Amino acid sequence: MALPSRSGNDRIASGDAESEDAELRAEREAMLRDIADEVAWTRQEIGKEALDAEVMAALSRVPRELFVPATERRFAFVNGPLPIGHGQTISQPYIVALMTDLLEPRSADRILEIGTGSGYQTAVLAELAREVYSVEIIAALANAARARLARLGYDNVSIRHGDGHQGWPEHAPYDGIIVTAAAPHIPPALLEQLKPGGRLVIPVGLPEQIQQLEVVTKNADGTLTHRDVLRVAFVPMTRDLR
Ligand code: SAH
Image (tube, rainbow, N blue to C red; front, side, top):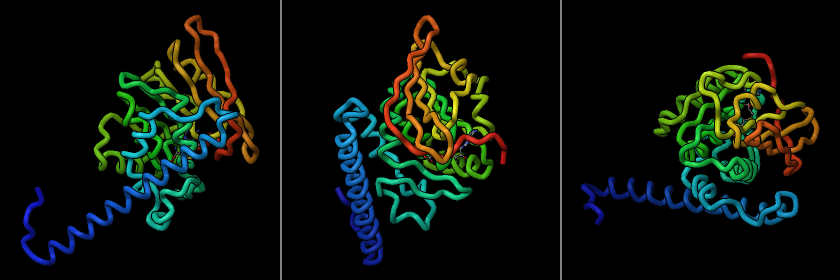
């Protein structure tokens, strides 16, 4: 039951907040429809008609508008990447959804992410897994994402400023590892830190070129199975701490 407003001003203010909420909800739903459309267009490559319903529900819960700079806010729900400063981007919603789906995170899982950026992918993972560890090479982005995720109440996330080529050995092994920057080769430390039965999702290829989004499964006997999923374009994995 709605509480009676104390004054006309309160009523106007809460009315505005409600219409803003409704608008954001509608924009988020439109983003989910755009993702579903792009999944359908790419069904041949990705080998599925639709993404996992829990992954889509997680995307519907994370307030993407709070992960983009204020100047980009009106584009927050457009199905494309956006600049987040320092020459980096927040990934396209379809790519975030697809990579999360390919990782198949479960509620008991411990996940490692390389390339925190805005922290948006981190938040989506934190909705689905028990613990998320994320490494970001640019200190300013790591600090901003840490503060943002804490403000939003994500208490199962840890962020470290460092070079993701080394993974995060202190919390290994991981049930799943996701890399959101392109590497010419898969960093060996990441394969070492993956549990048997675990999955690594990573764009492999040279910077400034089209890369292959790969899913690598570590089998029980330690051997690896590779699957190429989709041609993608990511910012490069770099080596210099900034
Ligand atoms: N998932 C992020 C994507 C950010 S773009 C988002 O949706 O917002 C890729 C990120 O990887 C950038 O923030 C970049 O600084 C970071 N990065 C590049 N090389 C890295 C490395 N060696 N270790 C950790 N992070 C790296």
